[in-house]
Length: 196
Ligand code: GRF
Image 1 (tube, rainbow, N blue to C red):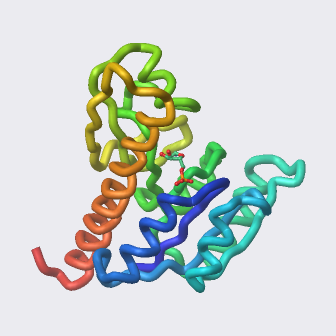
Image 2 (cartoon, protein in one colour; image 1 turned 180 degrees about the horizontal axis):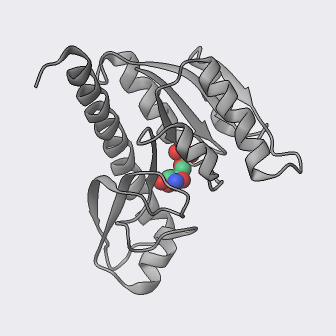
C-alpha cells in the first residue's frame, strides 16, 4: 500500500511510521511521500534523512479547496492509497475527504470525543481527568470527529505537568499509529487476495 504522510511540524509520528515500514512492522507498504504545508517544518529534514520524498505545498492565500486540490493532485500522481495526518494543522475540505473515502486517518493526543482541537493535553490537565491517552481515527470534514480506529490510555499523575503528560501520551501515540496503520494495511491486503 502506498502511504502519504502529511505534517506541519515536528514529525515524530511520521518518523514512527517511516521506521515501522522500514523494519517490516508494517508489511507490504511504502511511504510514497511526505507533504508539509510549512516549508520550515522540522519533520521535513527527518524525512529527507530517511530518503523519503518530500513536497512542500503552502496555502499561499488560496482557498482551502484550491490548496487541497494541489495536494490531492500530488497524492493521485503518486498512487497514494492511504493518507496519514501526523500533526497536520489544517482541516480538510469535503473534496479532500471525498477523494480518499475511508483512506485518511489522523492521530490526536486525547481519548476522543474528549478534548478535540488544540492543546488536548492541557485541556485534560485542566479538567482533572485521571485517564487520558490518544486516538487514531478516520478523518471527515469536522475537527477530530471521524470514526475511531483505536485508542491507547495513559494515566494522569497528580504531579504531571503539561510536558510530562504530553511526553507519555506521545510514546503511546507512536505505538497506536503504527498499530492502526498495520491493521488497515493488513485488512486491505486480505481484501485484495480474497483471504478472510
Ligand atoms: C501529536 O501530538 C499528534 O497527536 C497531534 O499533533 C502532534 C504532532 O506531533 N495531532 P508530531 O509532529 O508527530 O511529533
